[in-house]
Length: 219
Image (cartoon, rainbow, N blue to C red):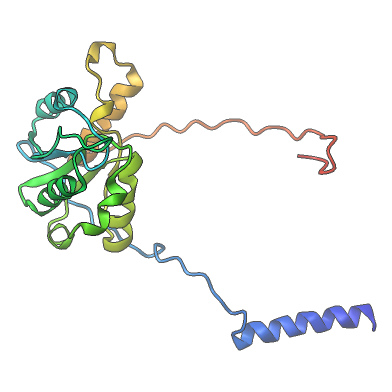
């Protein structure tokens, strides 16, 4: 068979299949037109709840974060079961569900800061009810294991959350904290109150191509 004619027949066949629908799978991105709902920014006197939905953290270790949040002008409500320990978790699954559910449902709580990450949230996330949270969105603050909660809220409800440091990242002594640690923690307050944030982007120069002796050649 003539080579050019053979290649031409393959292209024609492929075009026919794509138009017939056999290969016409067009990937869609559900987020391209998504507009996230922004929870209300906090005002002085608003209450931030602190819970341990994942790993354990003692009440004593929470105090530096509590004191700073109060210095920011906010009230703090610590979850009923925060400070309890069950193996590596901040309480049993039932206790952690109860704490997080209460914070999600309470309209007086304007933001929820997680004490720490680790592991444990994925064990309870399917047991949570977000009905009241959808009616009255509030800021969810954390990272690490808390990312599961961010993803769940983002994907299912289109509500913005705050992926940031948590209570276990707050220094015991601010005099010994470095500039980056201070800036990142202060940015939590800025984000919660709707202040403008500045982002420092460092661009590294491109690496020149170099010849490699491997079969791949240039890289």
